[in-house]
Length: 215
Ligand SMILES: [Zn+2]
Image (cartoon, rainbow, N blue to C red; front, side, top):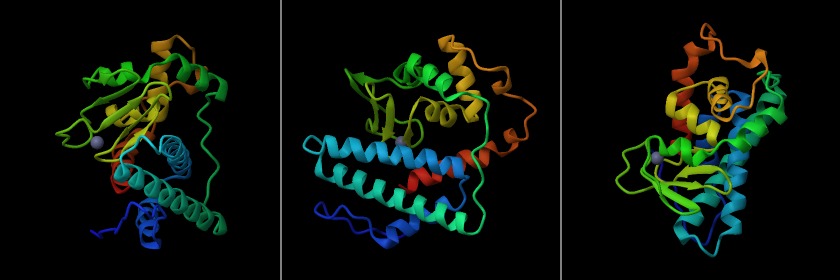
């Protein structure tokens, strides 16, 4: 495993650092790359907005890693586009407005609290389920409805949490939230137990975890 030199004064990722991310990105489908890039941008924006309040090493790691991941994803997507390898996003049959309504009605902290004891007020902490967490490394921002583990670096929104926690597909996670919130999904979007996608889920979950671990 390559050790990456980091100093609190330099938050620009090295080419080597970007390269490490990119090797993991190579295994991921396009739509996952877009999700990860959105999450990395979100974390970068949050880190910059709260720079005065974050410990220097956490701030440094978060900004450097987010920038490295974004650079790696952009490089990977342009590499694919240049070879005709990028595919259009899969149409999962859920209108953007429906997904937004579900996510606005659902509460991330309630889903996480099913399995994790959370402490705090608006920013909650708890022990991560995805690595052997001896200290509370999992942070949940209730106002933003995002979570991130500063131990294993996994993170995302409520859908990402459910997908990782239960090894669910995107549709299965959204369908669960539809039941919770009462916001109905179009018939086309209901999960299909016979879907061949189910066969690929363990590999996808593993890939996502490896990428998360490399952030
Ligand atoms: Zn973790």
